Every structure is written in C-alpha cells, then in structure tokens.
Amino acid sequence: MKCNKCAQRAVFTMRHYKLSLCETHYMEWFVSHTGQTIQKYHLLRPDERVLIAVSGGKDSLSLWDVLIRLGYAVDGLYIDLGIDGGFGYSALSHQKIDAFMAGHPETRLHVVDLAAEYGATLPQIAGRKRRGREKPCALCGLIKRHEMNRIAQAFGYDVLVTGHNLDDEAAVLFSNVLHWHTGYIARQAPVLEERTGLARKVKPLCRAYEREVAAYALIRGIDYIYEECPYVEGSRTLMYKGMLDQLEEEAAGTKLQFYVTFLHAKKDGFFRDEEALVELHPCDTCGQPTIAPGSCAFCRIWKEPER
Amino acid sequence: MKCNKCAQRAVFTMRHYKLSLCETHYMEWFVSHTGQTIQKYHLLRPDERVLIAVSGGKDSLSLWDVLIRLGYAVDGLYIDLGIDGGFGYSALSHQKIDAFMAGHPETRLHVVDLAAEYGATLPQIAGRKRRGREKPCALCGLIKRHEMNRIAQAFGYDVLVTGHNLDDEAAVLFSNVLHWHTGYIARQAPVLEERTGLARKVKPLCRAYEREVAAYALIRGIDYIYEECPYVEGSRTLMYKGMLDQLEEEAAGTKLQFYVTFLHAKKDGFFRDEEALVELHPCDTCGQPTIAPGSCAFCRIWKEPER
Image (cartoon, rainbow over all chains, first blue to last red; front, top):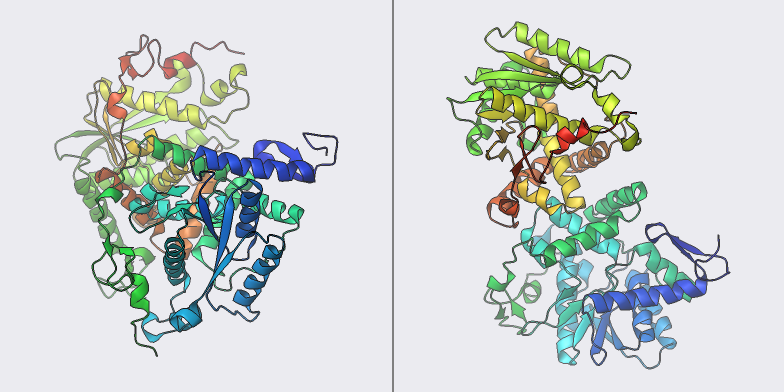
C-alpha cells in the first residue's frame, strides 16, 4: 500500500482516519496532530516552562520528543518508586530516560527517589500491615500526583504534562461511567486548570491511540521500556481496555468517538460540575492543597506505623 | 444449599443479593421485588387501567403474571409483525400468549396484525428498495411504539407497560453512553411520563436480571417462546450484553449498580435534560404527536413506494 501523501510505501495505517502513511509522513502527521490537540484544548502557550512526568515508557518519551520538536522548552521529572518486579522495573525505566536525554542536552531531569527522600519504596509502603494485600495502584497515583505538583511548584514550572493516551483516557472514562463517579466524570478533561497551590495539568496525547504512539516511538527510534509495570496485571483497567479494543475492532474509531463526544457533551454543559463547591485547605504538614483539614493523604502515608 | 428463608432446598441463587431461595420463596420474592420497583419509581397506581405489550417471551408473560398477582387489572397487546425466520416466529409467539391467557379468563388481548391492518409485514417493509439491507430493528421499534400508543389511547388505558428487564436497560444505557446520545441518556428511566397524546410508559422489570425473570417463568410453569427474534443475531445490543455479562461475572451486581447508580445521578440533577424544549405537533395523518411537522415516521412508512 502506498502512502496517502507521497509515492513511498506506507508503513502505518489508521483505519479510523482512513489514512496510510510512510515513515516520514507519519512522523510529520503525529507531531502536527499533537500540536492540533494542544491548540484545540488550549493546553500550552509557547512561552511557558513545561515539566513532563516521564516513566521511561513509550507515551511519555514520545511526547517529550514531540514537544521538543514543536519548540517547547520541556524538562523532565522521574519519580523512582523502587519497584523491582524481578527485572528491576524502576531502575530500567530510569536507564531508558537517561538514554533519551543523551540526545537532548538542552533538557534537565528532576529525579525523586522515594526511598531516599521519604524512607520507603512503593512496595514497602503497600506491604505495610494496615494496607493488607491491596494493590498499590491507588497509592502510586497518590504519590505521583503529590510529587509532580511539589516539583512543579518548587521549580516554578507553569504547567505539568503527562503522557496519558486515548486508550488510557477512554478506559478511565469507561470505568467512571460504569460506576457513575459523577465528580470524576465532570472533571475528566485534557486540561485540569491551575488552582492556588496546584499546577495546571495537561494531556496532549489524549486523542492519540496507544498504537499510534507506539508507531511513533518505533519509527523515531526511541528506546523505551517495553515491560508493563508488574502491578498492572489483572487490573480492572486492563479488562476495560480489552473491551474497548473489542469495540474498536468492531467499529474503527469507537474509542476516539467515545472520548471526543464526551468532551463535546461536557462543553455543552450536559454534566453538572460541583467542583467549584469543594474548598481546599493547605495540608498542615507539606502545605499542598487538600480537601480534608489536617494532613493530606500523602503526608499521612509516612505517619502510618511500619510493620 | 438451603433456602435463606426456610429449611427447603434452594433452587436459585442471586450472588449480587447473597440470597438463595427455594421455589416457593423465590416466587414470593420476585413478585414482592417487582412490587417494590413499582412503588419506588411510582410506576402504577392501584386503580389504573393497565395495558401490557406482550411478545410471547419470558419477560412480558412473567410480568403480566406478576402484575395480576399484585392485583392490577391488566390487558394485553400483541403486535403481529409477520416475522417467520423459518420457524413461524410471530405465529408461535401468538400461540404462547393464547396459552397463557387460557389460565387468565379475566384478561383481554388486543391484537394488531400489521399485514391485515396496513398491508405489509415487517420483513416486507424492511425489504423495500429504499431501505437497502438495513436491519429491521429500528423499524420494529418505531412500529411498536406507534401501535402501542394508538391502542392505549383508543381504549382509554392509563398506562402502558413493557417487559424490558435490567439486562435490556443496562445494554441500552451502555450503548447510549458509548455514543454519548445525551438526549436518550437524560430521558432513559423506568417511567416515561404522559404527554398530550402519549400514554405513560413504565418498565416494572427494570431492576430484574434476565436470569431472574427466566427463573420465575420456569418455576411458575409459564410456557414462553425460547427462540430469539431471528433479526437479533449479530446485533450491537448482543455484543453490549456480552460485555456486561463479562463485567457481571467479574463482580456480581455490576449491571444493577450501573443502572441504579445512573438513576441516582439523574435524580440528583447530574444530567441536563432538554426534553422540555422539544415541542410536539400532531401528525397530519394519524394525529399522534411527532417532532417534525407533517406526517410522523410511522405514517411515512406506508407512503414509501413499494418495490
């Protein structure tokens, strides 16, 4: 099959756009498509100082690469949670990021080593008595949100970028709808606006299918960590992604339509948003905004008795 | 396993309620649970004249049986669409209804024979040139809605009852959400209130799992048509039902929670309902309310050129 833009052989086909492209035109398309998402949802302004949270996976490294090519000044943040999983997951992730950075001497990487900074790795906290055999995924999200915001604020970044792709966003929406988590539904968006003490958070890959991002990383020669986090196995999110894959297989474009039509409905005021009603107070330990008075959930982690 | 209410052997278990019951107590439970749904959502008042749309399947016949046992005066309506499918689907359905009625001489059955009344069966209309090879399911829904309302109005029934069960409602909601059909989402409910020219429509089985209804029919000895409508095969709805079954398998109660939490969100005003803005006009052919001026969609069917 030929590229839809030149006479070269197409290497990648997107059924939902009825588009097949060669390597050169695919890379060009992906960068420009991400730029369009940024414009469409007003995610970034050209002069802003941007901090991207990187995991060493294809999404965050590809996005970092795309943002640099779009001309943004972007530094990275790696949060080392000390996950091993039998193959040194966290250490390997860090290596991939270092390898990427070797090609981008203009960027800076902030590293938070959870064990060095707070005295325990994620598996250690998750293993503590009180938490039983709970999966550490919720805890991981909590820690990352806190630390991302801390670094963004401490170093004066205007905006925090994450590599969530369309498959991630569609799966979260699917889960929120199945449980009718109305607060989460009303707030799910490509951009979470700044509030006092909370940096703005944006997701420029929210319209990019996971396989589109993987194709970009492959064609660009970005070396990323292929292994999934060892904790992801058997998670509900994986099941939801599997179902959305099935629906996509049946009708190309389903995931994109599910997410984008949701954003339209939201913009049209279909959902009542009560977020404005929730007042935030500074945590009495770290000072970051939190809902309940006293210490925030992150600071409470470190006050739990060790086993 | 023993019945949770007596010493008899349990014949049916509902994981989501952690409840196992013997034949007698299951029948009692099912009738009372349906009565609770009727109370909870204000579906029926004791003195109302009720018309139930029956298909000969387990849902409508079981519901008819339950409503009679709850003391309501309920007549039936059968719409014969002339579907054969190689085994006389419509004729067989009619037979099952007649068999049920033999045990209930106090009830009356209205029959609309589409071919006799309007000159063509559903397969004949669906096969007409203009419609191409479209599945007749949308057409079937349109015809049934029109004729149910016509009979309810003509004979002065207060309310129209259909046998939609939880699996049906959850699948419709799933589809509406996947496509963000906001108007349909805002209006999906156990009761559709009366408007000028439109009878009130209610779904007393909306909280009953399909397998609960099947168990009731089996235990009560209600003979129903086991065969699905020949057109249902390969439909999107079947795929959605399959996915909801998978989710239910993973976590008992998922379907019920998906539907009931939705109703809560709706009651709390989470969705903006614009229905009140839509003005209805009487169809210039049949007089039933319709959105567009001129003839309603049902009357337009009969004006299409035959092939």
